[in-house]
Length: 286
Image 1 (cartoon, helix red, strand yellow):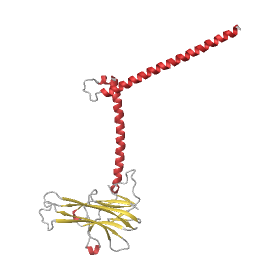
Image 2 (cartoon, one colour):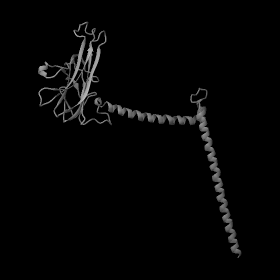
Image 3 (cartoon, one colour):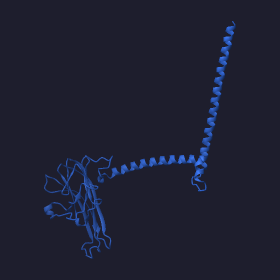
């Protein structure tokens, strides 16, 4: 009987110790949790206070060591760094997207080496090239040629902004490799000399008629076929400065294999063969 009572007392004592230990742990947890919440609220209030009262434009009175030891200065510097990094990343992404869209928009004069901008399966962009050995044209009368204007033969198809994608350039003509609907474009740039550049030479006409033609030549038809033309009347410049003019045109046409495209102009002697001003090309659209 005495042994049974002793075991009951020992069990009660052990249970009481366990309960006291659990209560102590719970009280300690609540205490430390309250302390952490208090510290967090204090830090948040101090951070907000730093942001509200911070002087972003220092007047130079405080030394750099004093600034670095100031908690408010550290908070604002970290925030500024985060904002600058976020804005820089976003700006870089937007600029990259805008540049890709811009490059895609100027595809007809785009160098094919640019990544991410695929060229059509059949395309060509040829540019003017200045030749010191021969003039840009050497043609006879219209009756022997079968087309209007003077033909431009000095085109560049490999260097600079020019390229050939499954098309050939032969004697100033673009050779069409396959049938389909093509988008065709051309621009020619003219420089009309002023009266002082021509040493006072008088012109019988007050205006110069500038015309640009786009022709296609078919193997089954003896005479070239006019696809498009563009024209304007330009006054001969007076004074020291020359007159600068350009003609641009574009359109679609259905072409057959072995068809050839070429450009003629009315005033070849006044044409400027700058590769960024005078060019023409075509690409398959369907």
